[in-house]
Length: 468
Image 1 (tube, helix red, strand yellow):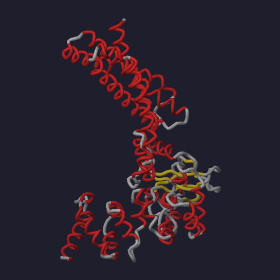
Image 2 (cartoon, rainbow, N blue to C red):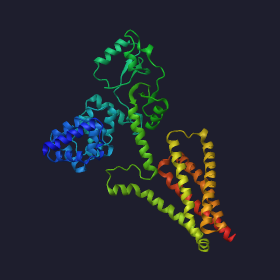
Image 3 (tube, one colour):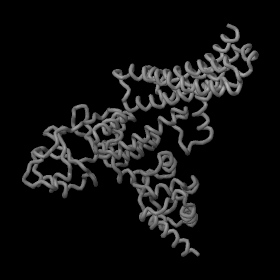
Image 4 (cartoon, rainbow, N blue to C red):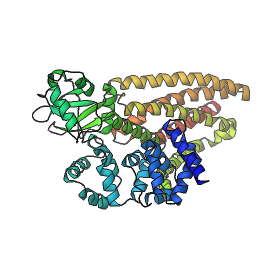
């Protein structure tokens, strides 16, 4: 029986290596790993993980229960591969760090690029962080401490300290010999940075171009002079925009004296853009930096503030309705129809808001095109308002056989759709001017405005028709 299970396990490993199975949903695979953990078979798990890609091994660890992950890390003779650790979800990394000894963390850091090491150190409390840093070689410790001294969202936090730079007066032959003999270079690199006597970058040469050029040629003669340099304190989101705008594979990072101190690659930027997109999506829903490993109380606390604000805004909308209590009593049909206007306005406002948040995040919305976009949203609101006013009026007329009611919902629909479009763009822009993240607070304000205006316009126009 045991040999049969192992046979199935190795077959699954082969399928994963051949990319023929999505093991995310393969309960049998996870069960085999769980059984091996229970049997303290660290050697089997270690050897199995070596057979597959680190990202696949990380997925297996992520799909284990918290207790099984703890048992796995604490198994005798099991050492988690640094590459596997880097591929883990950040929340799982934080969880596993609690079970790792300082010696294990030091061992992981020694085998990683500086940008990956920084990411791990960010998840360690200050007391243990200082102890771990003191156990690292002086050169590595100094580099990591310097990176940690910069803001969390800066370029310095995502750059690699390992890069390839050579003097401008070297020949291609000297460069090739240097690349072959130097063991401190990155394992993979696409570009070689050319520096002057003060170690300031003056250009780049693709590594493929070096291989195709004669040994006698000077590196300065084949370099690309238009090298984009990134300051160490530049916001990482801005770095992402630069990579996207200029289609960069890598870029050098310079300090305040314009000296080369690191390198950022496209895979680092891809991770940043993914994290920023996820963060904006969560904040737009008023959730914040919630993680899957957070407990019930912690998640409840994160969501409480925005739900409380939403409750108060709901009471505001209810208060507006209460003003027109007599009107509703005279025409009960208004109570049936008013949620339609508010709902359509809310959805239209959220559409505009989502587009605006994206344009703000990608720096597409500028002073030059701001007025044009405001005008555009106004006309979109008018057009959508007219279209849905006609549809709504037609349905109401068939339903209630009341021309006044059809006219009321038509006018209020147009007004609310215009307001929704305008405030969908004005609210996030205003919040940004007050240095408030528009992705966090915009949705509550836009929803409130469209609800209040929707009820106010619909019931106000209704009151005018019935009492005016």
